Length: 430
Image (cartoon, rainbow, N blue to C red; front, side, top):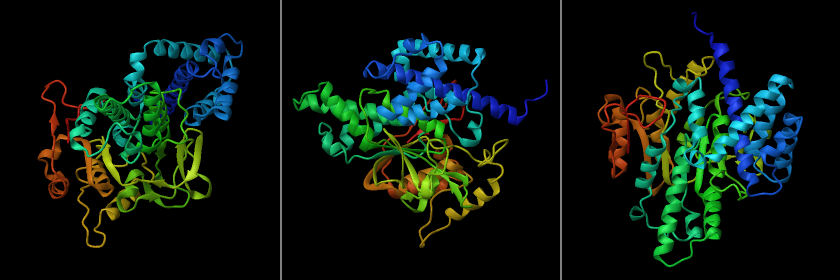
């Protein structure tokens, strides 16, 4: 059988991701309906003859009158782009019913099922380095990184926690950010009980709002991934309306201003990005960045604050064998590689301790280092070559010069070296 043409594969992947976006919106709608009487349960909409039209209208109502535009706007655009016919109606009803089945298994929602499916479907995974961090690996890494004994902070005080800033510069579908939220919540509960403070629903809702609006920051180049990050985090407490979520879709490639952008690598020599894609993949008005908030996409800059913790499973991409650095954008690949080399040159006599031979993960480690507070920490999933590979020497020098190495976690399971679900690349957590 001849190989399937790349364009046909891309269309197939786009269709799969569109279906996943719809399923994700159905799931979140059902969860939200349990907490907000304004939201219709899916079964009530399924009883309508024009399920597609009624769903599109209801999602617009949610966007206009409640919030969660990051979740429902993109899904509604997908819904409206689908032709109305008998096959569409049958497929949508089947998808909605499957979403109901998933909601009934609440444990699946807590384990980022959609993130796992998303990365399974993603066509360009090897070129983008978008490997799904397994839930056990993410939980272990964040439990170690956020061990209360390592931080001088009152974990029982939400107001103090507002200043505890955590970011993932390659957040994907939000697995590490979700693990960070759960680790912070565990610290809050233990500290509150120890001090005799109440740990009731009101206290946990207040904490969750602080975590979503102030603590967690996420950045990625894929709008669909950030869409899933927003819903993954919001599902932890769907009854809470957020003023803003610090989630940003980063520009990558050549944009209409004819400049080359490299995603979060833009932060290598600065703390803001002034041109950014919004959630729907369009340039924000006036060339401004687009921050994804509870009530929509607002034009702004995309800042990286000084961080207490930078946690990442950065892209492992490098040019080797059949892989290509920036291979997902062949039309701009040469220009992007040249721009990356330019970014890695010394600035003001300060060397950038990263190597493109090691791949983008080395560069992302250097970017994270630039944005830590003096007593900040990094928690990273990196290729196992970091421990001895010659290409990783600069990154090891960076760690040796600037950090006290607290943990190195490696798998000794001969059948499972990786910390990601959809790759067999051996990794370690540091």
